[in-house]
Image 1 (cartoon, rainbow, N blue to C red):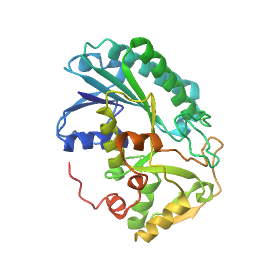
Image 2 (spheres, rainbow, N blue to C red):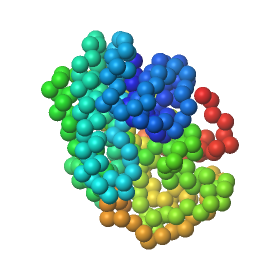
Image 3 (tube, helix red, strand yellow):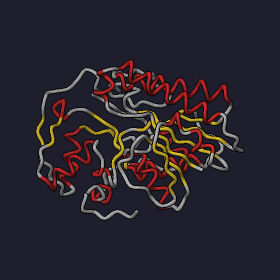
Length: 307
């Protein structure tokens, strides 16, 4: 059984939608959900550290996909100690539950942040072996959580991996409070509402299409041996200005304004290597390109979704 912990947001929804459409039974855990229950889903509403009875009722092999927690950088900066303490306690509490499950096979996958943990790339693509130089409290929190997962998993003897996810976008993202740059710009093309682009639109990010992300995650889970760290990234990085140019070539014309405003904790130049994950799932660099026309069309709230 696959259990998605912290599943209430867009990434959890994307993975859940993928497994539901594949008719795979799965379970979700979150304090709140921004999307309705799907076919083949078992759901627990509450803290991960309190899910002992829910998890104990799951039979068979157990694979946990554990989300790093809220990606709200500003909120983490306001009280970094409280933010770190909460997420460490939740993760440790859940790991205690997980390690005591009597299963023939256990896998624990921790979803970290591929952009914030590396910090600025300075023009060099960050591989899994690159130094972690986070600029934000959110990034430092993820590094601390990664270290806890590695230490606990090695001492407990179960299979684990750190998946460093870049910036996903895709079908259904318009449903969520935090929509990301791509969805905001696509929405603007329909509504005319202006999008403010910080740092004069020069912040550079790796964007990955959510359905490709889900395919790669599912593919990796089928392997008996998984690297301890894998970047789940497209390997393509673009500034907001470049994204707008791509959208306009695909007949999306958002309304936007460049502003100087940015914070010291924001990563300006994020470039993440996808070489390792491509070798695992047998894809080429061209296969990873995120912004083809059908991907962008799927972002529209007018596009019917299969659920």
